[in-house]
Image (tube, rainbow, N blue to C red; front, top):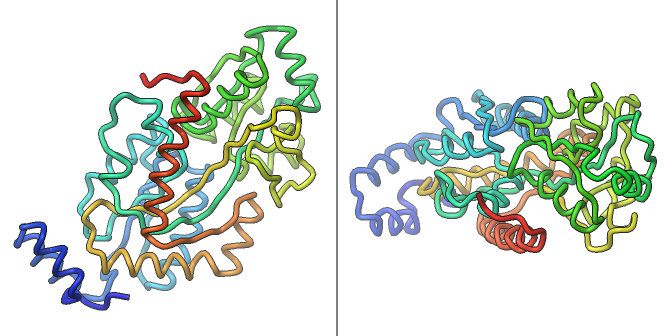
Length: 330
């Protein structure tokens, strides 16, 4: 691990930038223990969703380790774009970080232009967790399996609506792919995050939804929503009895998600390394792993370079999925 701002790799990076004033600022900052003041996690979705729960769980553990406050700031809107843009434009000093989600690698496939670039404008730190989505229906819907839901949708084209956490979010693509592979037509009702979408599904205003598993588990257990299947290629340890959509009659269907910590581009590498090491330790804490598992997700970390490669790969994968589903950037 790089210990100080005099690290040769750090100095080479600083010199190559040609910005001596900024380099001197970073060297002075790194002369202090990091973090020397509170750190902010920007969460681009409303409280209560999978991204928010993951961020708050890890923020609490990191705060304990650092003996500094780690503040979670929700900047929701536009399927995570508003929060991502704010994070990308934050000072690259390690004190404003971004809890990204799979939605941010899908966004380039759904928008012709974005105010930020998920690859160019961020320095990946580490994965935080891997997860999936659930296909759920309101109890009034007469379908107890994916097969029965498809038959119902075919009997009334356009008569069923599905909720997602926003236009451009992976659950939106999950719904698009479901329609394409099943040969059905559904009405899409987008929301600003999981929480309001779940509330409307529980009230029966929307018949079904593709949503993050984490905030849905309590509703499924209480019987206020009925889970039909898992969207990813493998069953979830949180609900092992639920089949995947692929094994329920739509082979090839596989959409999961992830959460991970990013820093603004040009954040000094010694800080990135310290953050990555802290994330590895935090995601290995038994209480964190248990908290995540209870919500249907798996704690997971990786190295900054590995995370960067994964993000590039996911952007390419979603472009291919969106194209095959007939989704055009708007």
